[in-house]
Image (cartoon, rainbow, N blue to C red; front, side, top):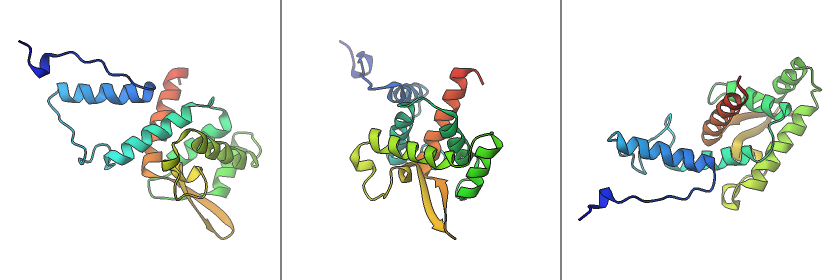
Amino acid sequence: MQSASDIAIAVYCNNIVEASAAMEAIRAVRRGEHPSLDKKVVDGANNAEIALSSRIEFALTKAPLKRPREIVLEQLSATTPGAWLPYPNLQAAFEEEGLKKEQAQAALRDLSWQMNEYLPPEDTVGVARGIEVLAERFRSGGEYQYRLTPAGRIAVERFLNRSKSLIGN
């Protein structure tokens, strides 16, 4: 007679992000680790942040990564956790890349649209714009400043690492 731990089970995942998370969990269990739902899992993030980061990462994958959105994500990711990225600094990064600084606002709108379009409604409850699930923003001195949310930071770093590994950078 087979024991419960000897029975093979197939798991259906909706996308590669879910499949990667499932495989990581399986490997952890096989190593003898048993992550619990309330345990801090990644860089101090709790399970809810990990789940949200997977949904944010999925939303990021739903549109081709064009250079303007990549610049925004790179600039936000390069900012120290908890530090704010002033909008003029983001515009300067666009100019350094040979792009018009006005493209920064368009890239932020694109990212906001992606979050609104591909995240479930419960993820965007309480935010004025979809971008705020990915990156918090506040207005100071007439300009917005941005910083990645904890879930946004996890998602963006994974997304950029995967994107760069896919194109060989």
